[in-house]
Length: 428
Image (cartoon, rainbow, N blue to C red; front, side, top):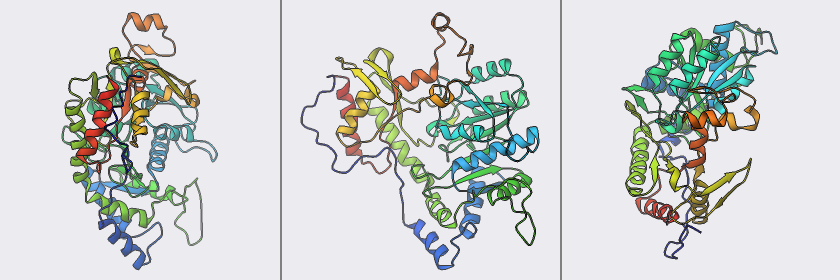
Protein backbone atom coordinates (compact mmCIF):
# COMPACT_ATOMS: atom_id res chain seq x y z
CA UNK A 1 0.00 0.00 0.00
CA UNK A 2 1.29 3.49 -0.83
CA UNK A 3 0.25 4.94 2.52
CA UNK A 4 2.93 4.47 5.18
CA UNK A 5 1.46 4.07 8.67
CA UNK A 6 4.47 4.83 10.85
CA UNK A 7 2.46 4.51 14.06
CA UNK A 8 3.21 8.05 15.24
CA UNK A 9 -0.16 9.56 14.32
CA UNK A 10 -3.13 8.47 16.39
CA UNK A 11 -6.74 8.79 15.17
CA UNK A 12 -8.29 12.11 16.12
CA UNK A 13 -10.22 11.74 19.36
CA UNK A 14 -12.81 14.22 18.11
CA UNK A 15 -13.87 13.86 14.49
CA UNK A 16 -12.43 16.39 12.04
CA UNK A 17 -15.38 17.35 9.85
CA UNK A 18 -15.65 18.56 6.29
CA UNK A 19 -17.70 21.57 7.36
CA UNK A 20 -20.06 22.10 10.28
CA UNK A 21 -22.16 24.97 11.64
CA UNK A 22 -20.32 27.49 13.80
CA UNK A 23 -22.53 29.10 16.41
CA UNK A 24 -21.46 32.14 18.43
CA UNK A 25 -24.28 32.81 20.88
CA UNK A 26 -25.72 35.82 19.08
CA UNK A 27 -28.00 33.41 17.21
CA UNK A 28 -29.70 32.48 20.48
CA UNK A 29 -30.73 36.06 21.20
CA UNK A 30 -32.71 36.27 17.92
CA UNK A 31 -34.32 32.86 18.48
CA UNK A 32 -35.18 33.79 22.09
CA UNK A 33 -36.77 37.03 20.92
CA UNK A 34 -38.93 35.11 18.42
CA UNK A 35 -40.09 32.72 21.12
CA UNK A 36 -40.67 35.37 23.79
CA UNK A 37 -42.69 37.52 21.38
CA UNK A 38 -44.52 34.43 20.09
CA UNK A 39 -43.44 34.96 16.47
CA UNK A 40 -42.68 31.32 15.72
CA UNK A 41 -44.40 31.08 12.33
CA UNK A 42 -43.34 32.03 8.80
CA UNK A 43 -43.65 35.75 9.54
CA UNK A 44 -41.73 37.91 11.98
CA UNK A 45 -39.01 40.46 12.59
CA UNK A 46 -36.14 37.99 12.08
CA UNK A 47 -37.32 37.21 8.55
CA UNK A 48 -37.70 40.89 7.68
CA UNK A 49 -34.28 41.76 9.10
CA UNK A 50 -32.55 38.79 7.43
CA UNK A 51 -34.00 39.75 4.05
CA UNK A 52 -32.94 43.38 4.48
CA UNK A 53 -29.47 42.46 5.78
CA UNK A 54 -28.67 40.10 2.89
CA UNK A 55 -30.12 42.35 0.19
CA UNK A 56 -27.94 45.21 1.47
CA UNK A 57 -24.79 43.09 1.73
CA UNK A 58 -25.13 41.62 -1.75
CA UNK A 59 -26.42 44.78 -3.40
CA UNK A 60 -29.85 43.60 -4.57
CA UNK A 61 -33.01 45.57 -3.96
CA UNK A 62 -35.09 42.69 -2.63
CA UNK A 63 -34.59 39.37 -0.88
CA UNK A 64 -37.27 36.79 -0.12
CA UNK A 65 -36.68 34.30 2.71
CA UNK A 66 -37.56 30.71 1.78
CA UNK A 67 -37.40 27.31 3.45
CA UNK A 68 -34.19 26.24 1.71
CA UNK A 69 -31.90 27.07 -1.18
CA UNK A 70 -33.61 24.48 -3.38
CA UNK A 71 -36.98 26.14 -2.83
CA UNK A 72 -35.39 29.45 -3.81
CA UNK A 73 -33.96 27.85 -6.97
CA UNK A 74 -37.30 26.31 -7.82
CA UNK A 75 -39.15 29.61 -7.61
CA UNK A 76 -36.35 31.45 -9.43
CA UNK A 77 -36.55 28.98 -12.31
CA UNK A 78 -40.36 29.02 -12.30
CA UNK A 79 -40.31 32.83 -12.34
CA UNK A 80 -37.95 32.94 -15.32
CA UNK A 81 -39.96 30.25 -17.10
CA UNK A 82 -43.16 32.25 -16.81
CA UNK A 83 -41.40 35.44 -17.94
CA UNK A 84 -40.19 33.58 -21.03
CA UNK A 85 -43.11 31.31 -21.88
CA UNK A 86 -46.16 32.52 -19.95
CA UNK A 87 -48.13 30.97 -17.11
CA UNK A 88 -48.69 27.23 -17.62
CA UNK A 89 -51.88 25.27 -17.05
CA UNK A 90 -52.23 23.70 -13.62
CA UNK A 91 -50.30 20.42 -13.65
CA UNK A 92 -47.78 21.65 -16.21
CA UNK A 93 -44.43 23.26 -15.51
CA UNK A 94 -43.37 26.69 -16.72
CA UNK A 95 -40.58 25.04 -18.76
CA UNK A 96 -42.64 22.17 -20.16
CA UNK A 97 -40.65 20.71 -23.07
CA UNK A 98 -38.01 23.47 -23.00
CA UNK A 99 -34.25 23.05 -22.77
CA UNK A 100 -32.24 24.90 -20.10
CA UNK A 101 -28.44 25.20 -19.98
CA UNK A 102 -26.97 24.29 -16.60
CA UNK A 103 -23.65 23.95 -14.78
CA UNK A 104 -22.51 20.32 -15.03
CA UNK A 105 -20.28 19.95 -11.97
CA UNK A 106 -22.62 20.82 -9.13
CA UNK A 107 -24.98 19.34 -6.55
CA UNK A 108 -28.22 18.03 -8.06
CA UNK A 109 -30.23 20.70 -6.22
CA UNK A 110 -29.03 23.09 -8.94
CA UNK A 111 -30.59 20.89 -11.62
CA UNK A 112 -33.68 19.26 -10.11
CA UNK A 113 -35.87 22.41 -10.14
CA UNK A 114 -35.54 22.47 -13.93
CA UNK A 115 -37.21 19.05 -13.94
CA UNK A 116 -39.81 20.24 -11.40
CA UNK A 117 -40.92 22.75 -14.03
CA UNK A 118 -40.92 20.22 -16.88
CA UNK A 119 -37.69 21.37 -18.53
CA UNK A 120 -34.73 19.40 -19.86
CA UNK A 121 -31.30 20.34 -18.52
CA UNK A 122 -28.48 20.57 -21.06
CA UNK A 123 -25.19 20.28 -19.19
CA UNK A 124 -22.31 22.64 -19.99
CA UNK A 125 -18.81 21.28 -19.44
CA UNK A 126 -16.43 22.63 -16.81
CA UNK A 127 -13.49 24.99 -17.38
CA UNK A 128 -10.24 23.38 -16.23
CA UNK A 129 -8.90 26.81 -15.19
CA UNK A 130 -11.81 27.67 -12.88
CA UNK A 131 -13.73 24.42 -12.20
CA UNK A 132 -16.88 26.38 -13.06
CA UNK A 133 -18.94 26.63 -16.25
CA UNK A 134 -16.76 26.88 -19.38
CA UNK A 135 -17.68 30.02 -21.40
CA UNK A 136 -16.43 28.42 -24.64
CA UNK A 137 -18.64 25.39 -24.08
CA UNK A 138 -21.55 27.75 -23.35
CA UNK A 139 -20.99 29.54 -26.66
CA UNK A 140 -20.93 26.18 -28.43
CA UNK A 141 -24.16 25.21 -26.67
CA UNK A 142 -25.93 28.29 -28.03
CA UNK A 143 -24.75 27.31 -31.53
CA UNK A 144 -26.22 23.84 -31.07
CA UNK A 145 -29.41 24.94 -29.27
CA UNK A 146 -30.13 28.58 -30.27
CA UNK A 147 -33.69 28.32 -28.93
CA UNK A 148 -32.52 28.12 -25.28
CA UNK A 149 -33.48 31.17 -23.24
CA UNK A 150 -32.56 30.20 -19.66
CA UNK A 151 -29.17 29.38 -18.09
CA UNK A 152 -28.56 28.21 -14.52
CA UNK A 153 -25.01 28.78 -13.25
CA UNK A 154 -23.60 27.56 -9.92
CA UNK A 155 -20.57 28.99 -8.10
CA UNK A 156 -18.62 25.90 -7.07
CA UNK A 157 -17.45 25.52 -3.44
CA UNK A 158 -17.42 29.30 -2.92
CA UNK A 159 -15.25 30.03 -5.99
CA UNK A 160 -16.39 31.47 -9.32
CA UNK A 161 -15.66 31.27 -13.00
CA UNK A 162 -15.60 34.31 -15.29
CA UNK A 163 -19.09 35.44 -14.30
CA UNK A 164 -19.20 38.67 -16.36
CA UNK A 165 -18.25 36.79 -19.54
CA UNK A 166 -20.78 34.02 -18.89
CA UNK A 167 -23.57 36.54 -18.24
CA UNK A 168 -22.57 38.55 -21.32
CA UNK A 169 -22.82 35.42 -23.49
CA UNK A 170 -26.24 34.59 -22.07
CA UNK A 171 -27.64 38.07 -22.56
CA UNK A 172 -26.19 38.27 -26.08
CA UNK A 173 -28.37 35.27 -26.92
CA UNK A 174 -31.42 36.71 -25.14
CA UNK A 175 -31.23 34.24 -22.26
CA UNK A 176 -32.06 34.92 -18.62
CA UNK A 177 -29.58 33.84 -15.92
CA UNK A 178 -30.36 32.17 -12.61
CA UNK A 179 -27.27 32.37 -10.38
CA UNK A 180 -26.97 29.59 -7.81
CA UNK A 181 -24.80 31.32 -5.20
CA UNK A 182 -25.75 28.77 -2.50
CA UNK A 183 -22.08 28.01 -1.77
CA UNK A 184 -20.57 31.45 -2.40
CA UNK A 185 -22.12 33.95 0.04
CA UNK A 186 -19.53 36.66 0.67
CA UNK A 187 -17.41 35.82 -2.40
CA UNK A 188 -16.85 38.58 -4.95
CA UNK A 189 -15.87 38.99 -8.59
CA UNK A 190 -14.33 42.33 -9.59
CA UNK A 191 -15.65 43.74 -6.33
CA UNK A 192 -19.25 42.64 -6.88
CA UNK A 193 -20.81 40.16 -4.49
CA UNK A 194 -21.91 36.85 -5.93
CA UNK A 195 -25.67 36.93 -6.09
CA UNK A 196 -25.41 40.13 -8.15
CA UNK A 197 -24.72 38.43 -11.48
CA UNK A 198 -27.94 36.55 -12.18
CA UNK A 199 -31.15 38.13 -13.37
CA UNK A 200 -32.46 36.18 -10.37
CA UNK A 201 -30.08 34.74 -7.76
CA UNK A 202 -30.28 32.53 -4.69
CA UNK A 203 -28.25 31.77 -1.57
CA UNK A 204 -28.52 28.94 0.98
CA UNK A 205 -28.34 28.72 4.76
CA UNK A 206 -28.04 24.93 4.87
CA UNK A 207 -26.34 23.43 7.92
CA UNK A 208 -22.84 23.21 6.44
CA UNK A 209 -22.78 26.55 4.58
CA UNK A 210 -20.49 29.41 5.55
CA UNK A 211 -23.51 31.08 7.19
CA UNK A 212 -26.26 28.79 8.41
CA UNK A 213 -29.72 28.91 9.85
CA UNK A 214 -29.77 25.10 10.02
CA UNK A 215 -31.82 25.39 6.84
CA UNK A 216 -33.31 28.23 4.83
CA UNK A 217 -32.45 30.22 1.74
CA UNK A 218 -33.07 33.50 -0.05
CA UNK A 219 -34.16 34.54 -3.52
CA UNK A 220 -32.58 37.82 -4.67
CA UNK A 221 -33.99 40.20 -7.27
CA UNK A 222 -34.10 43.87 -8.23
CA UNK A 223 -37.80 43.70 -9.15
CA UNK A 224 -40.48 44.42 -6.57
CA UNK A 225 -43.04 42.61 -8.74
CA UNK A 226 -40.84 39.50 -8.84
CA UNK A 227 -40.29 39.59 -5.08
CA UNK A 228 -44.02 39.93 -4.43
CA UNK A 229 -44.80 37.12 -6.86
CA UNK A 230 -42.34 34.79 -5.09
CA UNK A 231 -43.73 35.69 -1.66
CA UNK A 232 -47.21 34.85 -2.92
CA UNK A 233 -46.15 31.53 -4.46
CA UNK A 234 -44.25 30.58 -1.30
CA UNK A 235 -47.37 30.99 0.85
CA UNK A 236 -49.63 28.72 -1.25
CA UNK A 237 -50.52 31.52 -3.69
CA UNK A 238 -53.25 32.85 -1.46
CA UNK A 239 -55.05 35.77 -3.10
CA UNK A 240 -55.94 39.02 -1.34
CA UNK A 241 -59.38 37.97 -0.18
CA UNK A 242 -61.12 37.50 3.16
CA UNK A 243 -61.27 33.75 2.53
CA UNK A 244 -58.69 31.35 1.11
CA UNK A 245 -58.82 32.15 -2.60
CA UNK A 246 -56.39 30.38 -4.98
CA UNK A 247 -56.02 31.21 -8.66
CA UNK A 248 -52.63 29.65 -9.38
CA UNK A 249 -50.43 26.89 -8.03
CA UNK A 250 -48.65 27.64 -4.76
CA UNK A 251 -46.06 26.15 -2.40
CA UNK A 252 -45.36 26.00 1.33
CA UNK A 253 -41.85 27.45 0.93
CA UNK A 254 -41.64 30.36 3.39
CA UNK A 255 -38.76 30.46 5.88
CA UNK A 256 -39.45 30.11 9.61
CA UNK A 257 -38.86 33.08 11.89
CA UNK A 258 -36.85 30.73 14.15
CA UNK A 259 -34.59 29.61 11.30
CA UNK A 260 -34.24 33.21 10.15
CA UNK A 261 -33.12 34.15 13.66
CA UNK A 262 -30.31 31.59 13.60
CA UNK A 263 -29.20 32.78 10.15
CA UNK A 264 -29.43 36.44 11.17
CA UNK A 265 -27.19 35.88 14.19
CA UNK A 266 -24.76 33.81 12.12
CA UNK A 267 -24.62 36.52 9.42
CA UNK A 268 -22.86 38.77 11.95
CA UNK A 269 -19.85 36.45 11.66
CA UNK A 270 -19.75 35.93 7.86
CA UNK A 271 -16.43 37.69 7.26
CA UNK A 272 -14.87 36.10 10.34
CA UNK A 273 -15.83 32.71 8.88
CA UNK A 274 -14.37 33.66 5.50
CA UNK A 275 -11.03 34.58 7.07
CA UNK A 276 -10.95 31.29 8.96
CA UNK A 277 -11.78 29.31 5.82
CA UNK A 278 -9.13 31.22 3.87
CA UNK A 279 -6.53 30.33 6.49
CA UNK A 280 -7.46 26.63 6.13
CA UNK A 281 -7.06 26.85 2.33
CA UNK A 282 -3.70 28.61 2.59
CA UNK A 283 -2.34 26.11 5.14
CA UNK A 284 -3.16 23.29 2.72
CA UNK A 285 -1.52 25.22 -0.12
CA UNK A 286 1.66 25.66 1.94
CA UNK A 287 1.60 22.13 3.34
CA UNK A 288 1.31 20.51 -0.11
CA UNK A 289 4.37 22.25 -1.57
CA UNK A 290 6.53 19.72 -3.37
CA UNK A 291 3.66 17.26 -3.81
CA UNK A 292 1.92 16.48 -7.13
CA UNK A 293 -1.34 17.94 -5.85
CA UNK A 294 -2.82 21.40 -6.46
CA UNK A 295 -5.53 23.39 -4.74
CA UNK A 296 -8.66 24.53 -6.57
CA UNK A 297 -7.72 27.44 -8.88
CA UNK A 298 -8.74 31.03 -8.18
CA UNK A 299 -9.58 32.93 -11.36
CA UNK A 300 -8.39 36.53 -11.73
CA UNK A 301 -11.05 38.88 -10.38
CA UNK A 302 -12.50 36.34 -7.94
CA UNK A 303 -12.14 36.68 -4.18
CA UNK A 304 -13.66 33.39 -2.97
CA UNK A 305 -15.26 32.70 0.38
CA UNK A 306 -13.16 29.49 0.60
CA UNK A 307 -16.18 27.50 1.81
CA UNK A 308 -14.52 24.18 0.98
CA UNK A 309 -10.82 23.54 0.34
CA UNK A 310 -10.55 21.23 -2.65
CA UNK A 311 -7.53 19.80 -4.46
CA UNK A 312 -6.66 17.79 -7.55
CA UNK A 313 -3.90 15.18 -7.96
CA UNK A 314 -1.58 15.48 -10.97
CA UNK A 315 -2.46 12.89 -13.58
CA UNK A 316 0.99 11.26 -13.53
CA UNK A 317 0.75 10.83 -9.73
CA UNK A 318 -2.57 8.95 -9.88
CA UNK A 319 -2.59 5.26 -9.06
CA UNK A 320 -5.14 3.16 -10.90
CA UNK A 321 -8.66 3.83 -9.63
CA UNK A 322 -12.08 2.77 -10.88
CA UNK A 323 -15.48 3.88 -9.63
CA UNK A 324 -18.79 2.13 -10.07
CA UNK A 325 -22.17 3.60 -9.20
CA UNK A 326 -21.62 3.22 -5.45
CA UNK A 327 -18.21 1.66 -4.88
CA UNK A 328 -14.60 2.44 -5.78
CA UNK A 329 -11.48 0.32 -6.13
CA UNK A 330 -7.84 1.26 -6.55
CA UNK A 331 -4.48 -0.45 -6.85
CA UNK A 332 -1.83 0.98 -4.48
CA UNK A 333 1.38 2.11 -6.15
CA UNK A 334 4.60 3.56 -4.77
CA UNK A 335 4.75 7.38 -4.90
CA UNK A 336 1.20 7.51 -6.25
CA UNK A 337 -2.25 7.82 -4.76
CA UNK A 338 -5.86 8.68 -5.68
CA UNK A 339 -8.86 10.36 -4.02
CA UNK A 340 -10.25 7.00 -2.89
CA UNK A 341 -7.09 6.14 -0.96
CA UNK A 342 -6.74 9.59 0.60
CA UNK A 343 -10.37 9.59 1.73
CA UNK A 344 -10.01 6.08 3.17
CA UNK A 345 -6.90 7.12 5.11
CA UNK A 346 -8.58 10.26 6.45
CA UNK A 347 -11.61 8.23 7.54
CA UNK A 348 -9.35 5.71 9.30
CA UNK A 349 -7.93 8.56 11.38
CA UNK A 350 -11.40 10.01 12.08
CA UNK A 351 -11.34 12.89 9.56
CA UNK A 352 -13.98 13.59 6.92
CA UNK A 353 -13.31 14.40 3.28
CA UNK A 354 -15.49 13.87 0.22
CA UNK A 355 -15.18 13.32 -3.51
CA UNK A 356 -15.72 16.31 -5.78
CA UNK A 357 -19.30 16.64 -7.03
CA UNK A 358 -19.95 13.91 -9.57
CA UNK A 359 -20.88 15.78 -12.79
CA UNK A 360 -24.56 15.80 -13.58
CA UNK A 361 -24.10 14.29 -17.05
CA UNK A 362 -22.65 11.20 -15.32
CA UNK A 363 -25.60 10.78 -12.97
CA UNK A 364 -27.95 7.91 -13.86
CA UNK A 365 -31.02 10.15 -13.63
CA UNK A 366 -29.62 12.61 -16.20
CA UNK A 367 -27.44 10.45 -18.46
CA UNK A 368 -29.80 10.77 -21.42
CA UNK A 369 -29.60 14.57 -21.33
CA UNK A 370 -27.39 16.53 -23.74
CA UNK A 371 -23.89 17.43 -22.58
CA UNK A 372 -21.83 20.09 -24.37
CA UNK A 373 -18.05 20.59 -24.34
CA UNK A 374 -16.18 23.44 -25.97
CA UNK A 375 -15.94 21.34 -29.14
CA UNK A 376 -19.60 20.43 -29.28
CA UNK A 377 -21.87 17.69 -28.02
CA UNK A 378 -19.99 15.37 -25.70
CA UNK A 379 -22.51 12.63 -26.47
CA UNK A 380 -21.66 12.77 -30.17
CA UNK A 381 -17.87 12.96 -30.01
CA UNK A 382 -15.87 9.77 -30.42
CA UNK A 383 -13.04 9.01 -28.00
CA UNK A 384 -10.58 9.24 -30.87
CA UNK A 385 -11.80 12.74 -31.75
CA UNK A 386 -11.52 13.85 -28.13
CA UNK A 387 -7.98 12.44 -27.84
CA UNK A 388 -6.86 13.92 -31.16
CA UNK A 389 -8.11 17.39 -30.19
CA UNK A 390 -7.06 17.18 -26.53
CA UNK A 391 -10.67 18.00 -25.57
CA UNK A 392 -11.22 16.37 -22.22
CA UNK A 393 -14.53 15.88 -20.52
CA UNK A 394 -13.20 18.28 -17.91
CA UNK A 395 -15.81 17.65 -15.23
CA UNK A 396 -15.26 13.90 -15.40
CA UNK A 397 -11.51 14.42 -15.12
CA UNK A 398 -11.80 16.68 -12.05
CA UNK A 399 -14.19 14.19 -10.45
CA UNK A 400 -11.68 11.39 -11.11
CA UNK A 401 -8.68 13.23 -9.62
CA UNK A 402 -10.17 15.76 -7.21
CA UNK A 403 -11.36 15.69 -3.60
CA UNK A 404 -12.80 17.95 -0.91
CA UNK A 405 -10.55 18.18 2.13
CA UNK A 406 -11.53 18.67 5.78
CA UNK A 407 -12.44 22.37 5.78
CA UNK A 408 -14.10 23.00 9.11
CA UNK A 409 -13.21 26.44 10.45
CA UNK A 410 -12.95 24.97 13.95
CA UNK A 411 -10.13 22.60 12.95
CA UNK A 412 -6.97 23.69 14.79
CA UNK A 413 -3.66 24.34 13.06
CA UNK A 414 -2.19 21.31 14.80
CA UNK A 415 -5.02 19.09 13.62
CA UNK A 416 -4.64 20.39 10.08
CA UNK A 417 -0.89 19.69 10.15
CA UNK A 418 -1.69 16.06 10.94
CA UNK A 419 -4.25 15.92 8.11
CA UNK A 420 -1.60 17.28 5.74
CA UNK A 421 0.93 14.73 7.00
CA UNK A 422 -1.52 11.89 6.40
CA UNK A 423 -2.03 13.08 2.83
CA UNK A 424 1.72 13.48 2.27
CA UNK A 425 2.25 9.87 3.33
CA UNK A 426 -0.22 8.72 0.69
CA UNK A 427 2.33 9.84 -1.92
CA UNK A 428 5.20 7.82 -0.42
